[in-house]
Image (cartoon, rainbow, N blue to C red; front, side, top):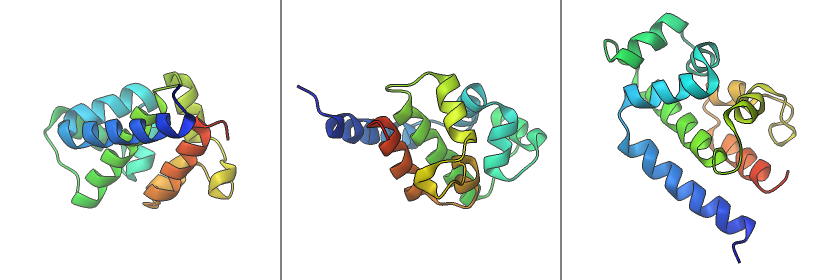
Length: 127
């Protein structure tokens, strides 16, 4: 029998691997497909037009923003084990009790990756 802890651990490993293996344009496209262009740009802290440039590969973000995008991608992959895109998008936008009522979008923009990952784990296990 698979426990919730097993789901979270295997999801974390799978999502990390995918976040490392995929190209940045593919990751940006995935984020835009799951969160939309506006939320993706809000997490990055840039204009939606800049995100378009990253998706096409004509522009490249700073290393810090690329890490933010890859970490966001990993969290979405982890959440997608149990939840649909609409639920994940709503989770990213809403005030989160695990993050002191800050939305995951805001927390990711502040590079609070571990806190958001822990909040995602809590959400996956029913919290």
